[in-house]
Length: 346
Image 1 (tube, rainbow, N blue to C red):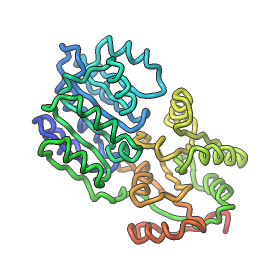
Image 2: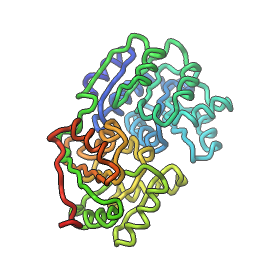
Image 3: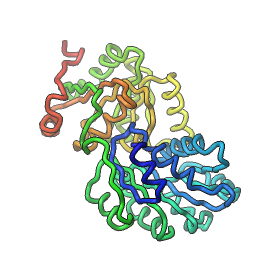
Image 4: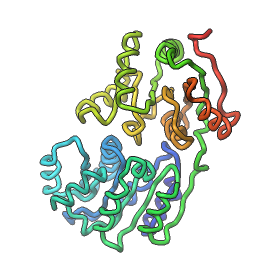
């Protein structure tokens, strides 16, 4: 990804890059952005839009690391943090702003952020931003940037809505594709377990006690209420677990993520939205506690493990209500996924 994108972006071309997570895309756009910025100018010169506050902070930290010796100042703008804190930082001067579309648009409306001198815009995890519903915000933001800007779009999938943005806002872009759109990471061992709905919690608890072996497990659920209920249920089965979702405060989410990254917490339950873009390279197990609703969602979820050439295991629970989706999954990935038996049923 970096080998193909960096020369294109340094030459000033618009870029569309399609690749799964864990391919080093932050540095692929971060290095050219840092080099493009003029530290002597106080204005915001580059804008990165990201779907979640966690990804915005993660990208901010990476760009700060890349530009720490060149005087480039990077600021993250996202919901859940006081506006006054961000306004103070903006007034002090930022060269690159990384933000979620909603909060960036909020600053633009308040005139606390100017993007009139932006030279480059990056849309990170574009398909995820559209899935969340950020398309109108993204369109409004892009219309306020200079027409002669450079634009780069990074996305795991290239569905119609993403291509629509490319058509409307990018100028003759170069296309970069790393792997097939629905290609799963090659080192992920994929397995599914058929389980009665009433047995899911006990089945998962037994699996975690038997198979985790010191690794880290990321559990995916559809709803915030589902995350909270599963956390309480697993705790009753002596599983140390915490949840993360959009209904939590930013300090709560940050505390949970810090514990998970540092290894003090081994099991994390999350909604799709909360987990998007999180860089947790040590995840050994991804468990689809709730069946993904489509193949794209399945690929996104299991892309959380086996990152950067590591090995990983992707487990999917299949209840009596999930048979149709299981058939679709098997038709898509074929022999890459195998059937297993839960310890509960042995």
